[in-house]
Image (tube, rainbow, N blue to C red; front, side, top):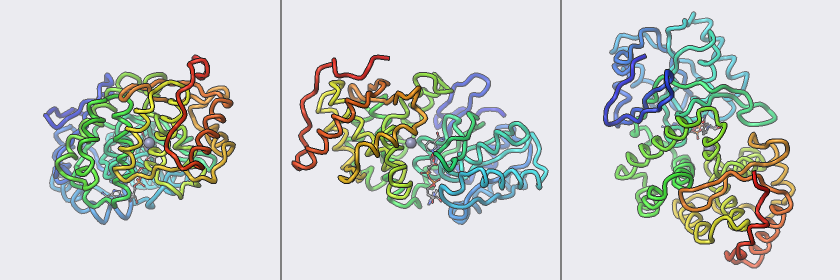
Length: 389
Ligand SMILES: NC(=O)c1ccc[n+]([C@@H]2O[C@H](COP(=O)([O-])OP(=O)(O)OC[C@H]3O[C@@H](n4cnc5c(N)ncnc54)[C@H](O)[C@@H]3O)[C@@H](O)[C@H]2O)c1
Ligand SMILES: [Zn+2]
């Protein structure tokens, strides 16, 4: 499939698997011509859910028909429950029944759930057929549609079954975010803030200066936010596609975040909300271990709160519950929990955590909650730092 280059494109440089992220308001109605310009000659299978189908199914279907395609829909359930082996099998069944062939294309239209499961189906059906991401949530537009992580959940854990499988193109229409429920939008902002923290101080400062616009989902900020996040993710993925090194920094906020999600049985917080809380806790750990100044913890916490994300973990949470939940993270290697911790805004490090120091950090934190003060203890000496890698 050919690539299209224009000022709206963010390239993802991965050799013969390179592709473009195209970001343009209203592009949904052009999608048929984009596919034909990109040399896509086969049939198009649109995988989506009932919510997104109702909102955007018609426009995508019409655009594809206008370009000469005869698309058909596979509708999967809304929500995380679609991301299971059973959900995957249903998609594969439909592909078999429709005699979908190698040159045909799967188009994932929806949030991260749709993109993950449709991408995984594309990676396995006939040992891989082309797939295109058309993300419709903020999380999906700035994160899940880029980088080729696809997969489904296992009852024992999230994303345990999957494959690295890059899309042929990512098509982002910022206009679709207008229908996104505000809670989903705000949850996505946690991943946006994460990019500033891990890779771009200037972008973090931009976010600090545009909190009102971010909260209001203003058109003034959306293009820059989408583009900058995609650029950062594309750059990281291009340097480490399979997460053997640098890509791990994208997990900032996720070690504690995933543990909180599991603790809340995936009901209490949306993923982005848990990541925001995870970033607050992980920055606090970094400060406790002497890795960063209190100013970093406060500035980040302030931004997270100001955009409307939750900022406190439940007081009733116990250290053991948190620690055990953290053990199930995919980033645990031989019992060591590898965690991304900030040193400065825009700079992070991957550090193995030692249970004893984290237990002490946790009790200090609990005490400070009890004293109803936000003051965290002074940084400890580097000797308390977690074991060096
Ligand atoms: N592959 C990756 O690299 C990666 C990265 C981050 C997250 N994820 C995965 O993504 C999933 C979370 O993604 P998500 O937050 O997009 O959740 P989601 O796909 O469940 O979408 C959230 C909700 O928004 C609705 N929706 C989608 N687009 C809409 C629109 N334009 N207007 C109105 N409603 C809309 C959906 O129907 C759903 O109810 C998780 O499963 C997570 O593991 C994957
Ligand atoms: Zn995430």
